[in-house]
Length: 361
Image 1 (tube, helix red, strand yellow):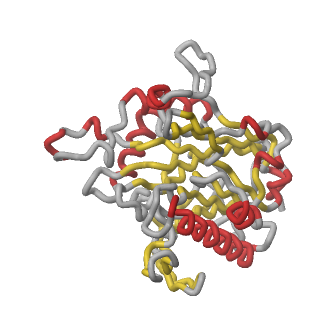
Image 2 (cartoon, rainbow, N blue to C red):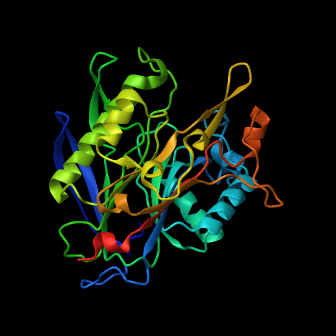
């Protein structure tokens, strides 16, 4: 989000869930032209969501500058994990990438974007344009959207929902941020003058399952975030039409069943359910944690939801497994030390979409 690409800034007030909040919107120029149509030779988009687990470059910062940090709150990500994640992304090179747990340097808001710029330059050959506004997390854990440079979009409009408020029903209707991090939205247009985006990308990292006061596993808070997401998506569909192409790429921090599943899948389908080539249900594992007693718990927390014309054009949906030095796929971890040896306790989720026919006019 360099000054050279910032076209304009404005804020607007939006009424949602009976709460008045301010949405910040930035616009950026893309490489396309005003008469751009999707090139026939570029028919597919590869998209990915990936929780990088405490992504930072704190190891490069002198300890005297950081002070006495609690490593449980501000863990320093080892260089080998950064390199490993970089190697995964270089191999896959998704066109659109949503990242969770991009950390700020303590006491330096917005520095997570600086860490990501370093990562982009050193590991990804500066292949991406980065969209990130610091969110609400007390530890500075942010959600970023990265777009591969050179895609034929003429206009990007980035919208943050960090200032949306919620009356905490578990704690006396106290007003707090609706999203514990953010729900950033990136509208992507082929022509700057297009009223309807060719694609809308939403990214998020929903509330963790840590207990809150009067809210075991933060279930009330997290489900309110799902409901707010549904309202926001319905608002986008109301503005641009039910067939607008939309992706919701997130760490949902819960296996979506019951009310949670209904809230999200009322507005978007699961890519694994609509893809021509997919992953069997029993193998849809995107995160492994160790429960009390040392028992591994395997979950599908990370996912991509899809809506619009492109929902009929999903070629494949997959989960990227980690590989050893010899290129062999590593088994899912069974012990804490095995999880800790991986670059993240989450696995990247990826989909390939035939995009050309979905947006030709």
